[in-house]
Length: 160
Picture (spheres, helix red, strand yellow):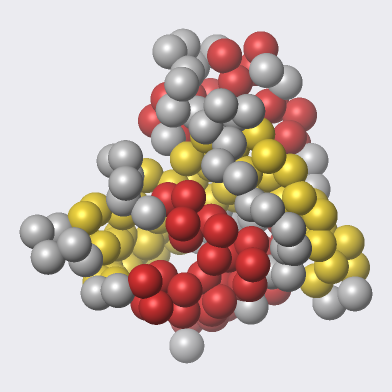
């Protein structure tokens, strides 16, 4: 683990830059067993970013928002190896302990990519994510992004 997190400020002026970011992230070897926390208001692009990333990782079929199901799981092949992906949305949680009651601690302890929206709803109960992505929509409908790398697990493509 890094002694201190690395932070990058990005600006995505259009959807293509969101897609480009997702494709670049999909190339990082550490993505297969990383946790990514997505912060942002409704409509800031959290689910869209996740869809782009899952497509870049090779997920086929419908990629649904987990707002009501809480968790959607996917399988794909990355470098000829099976990869599990968990997309979670904690927006509807009113108590941080709901994630434990839902059995999500087991998902966080398992292998695979864990992407979760509204991490503030589970407060300090979840493990610290490897990556935090904070999305803010500015007055020009662009995404101001703060990318925070908390561990060295997912950082190879950002060092270049």
